[in-house]
Image 1 (tube, helix red, strand yellow):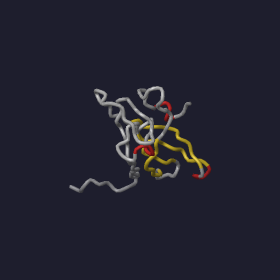
Image 2 (cartoon, helix red, strand yellow):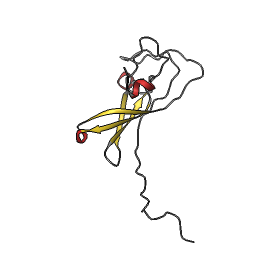
Image 3 (tube, one colour):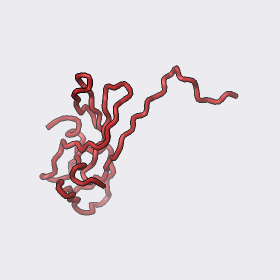
Image 4 (tube, one colour):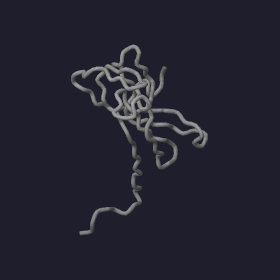
Length: 126
């Protein structure tokens, strides 16, 4: 156990639902090349069923090491979309049955570079 996904995993999946199970989908590097940002799927996947099921929906932050040859999940920006009332167990083919209320299921991630302070102002002249 332990780690960024474990710390942000759903807790209402029951005894058989695995936690610390990041379901990575899309990935994009940060402009400085130090990190990769991952979209992390949720426990009730909207599409792609079991291959996209995860326990910590949101955006994962992977710190790259050895010049990008390896990396480690160092953070999860957790998203949530809880249903007020349970609607039954989600059982994706080949995946794990999930009886909980979390329906967040992040499908993409986009990294936008912040403009430098030396960039010209976008304010129109008077």
